[in-house]
Picture: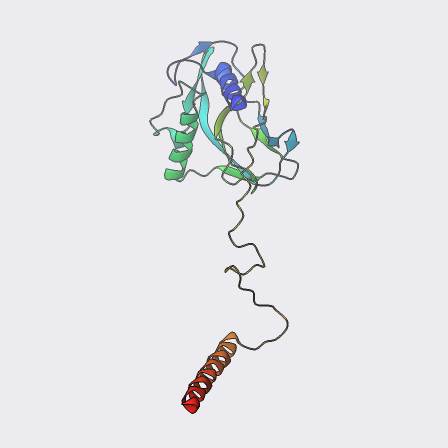
Length: 225
């Protein structure tokens, strides 16, 4: 998704674009004591879509050394064996989600309100992973993505970051071969008239009547002889 790619690129520009997780940069260091927020707005064709959940994992801390800084994995993800050399990678986000599940790392999971906008307040500076475990029943879950607090837009650090992933609507379910209210067998219709006579009894009466008719036919043929 283009939006996710752009968000990841902004995160990379803000805090990391090197070839290793500990690559350092000489730039004005963000205020690590300042909290921010992550706002995720779920949209489809310009409309906001509520319901479902979003999960937020803190996967990276900002390591400062004099005027240099870099991303490093948090203690929970330190042993994952991945690198932060490509924050635009969809695979990295998916691998981190899989690692978290396999190692019992619990995220901050919240329900998306009807407004379609979920805001995480009081977010400490760092690198975060957003995952949708449960989507609105009419839509597919969004792909997981990485986002940082703060983000650097080339001029200043933005501590209240926003994301607006576009939802993809699920295909309309195929009609069942047997529409509601119609019998499963063509040409067979059992009217519901309020007659509660068991079907087995009706079948039994028909069998007895048929047998009686057969006996009469045989008797007539013998009489003619």
